[in-house]
Image (tube, rainbow, N blue to C red; front, side, top):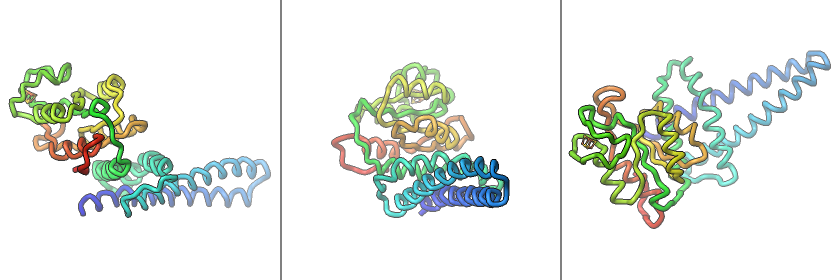
Length: 256
Ligand code: SF4
């Protein structure tokens, strides 16, 4: 129920953004009807581009709504719905700021939409093709182990979730890496070249990572921050395990 409400924020803002673009296109059309011949041609070209974009994104939004409502992706709208979600996200964030909607709420909503599409893709890979990407803020702040260089330096002492993630990585034979920031995360994705990434981070970093890694299937899990941002954060290990199991070939259970 909570997840449904979260998704509605993003989809609602995207719908409003489309309405605004449509109003702008209508204003342009009015100018064409009243302006000179040169303005007419210039605006006609511009309008054709805007209308083409609106139709494509509108179909994408339709695909997104059908996907969210039925839990099934319309195959020929799959690419358009991804484009609609990513192209209209900045617009949704700006509109949300004007309307006073918290940015993290919009980002969390976008992440829920992404994760539903992630589950619907039902992409199954071999363990070595899956990477769990964790942020360094999950590591206990007092721990001196250099887990960002080599996660296997973790002694699994139980003071933070890095040990639990390492246990999961060993159990399923998947890759695990700890990133110090966005640049390092991008480098790790280049190095491991995974087909599927299970990314853990705050909402802001997750959304930015999702935008950067659109060519890869990414399941996003927001961390918990009981001691504030970027400090001794935590993650729901059952959700991570659910997402891993849902992505591995030969394992039938669904994502958490
Ligand atoms: S579980 Fe690993 S990373 Fe976390 S505090 Fe213990 S040794 Fe350090």
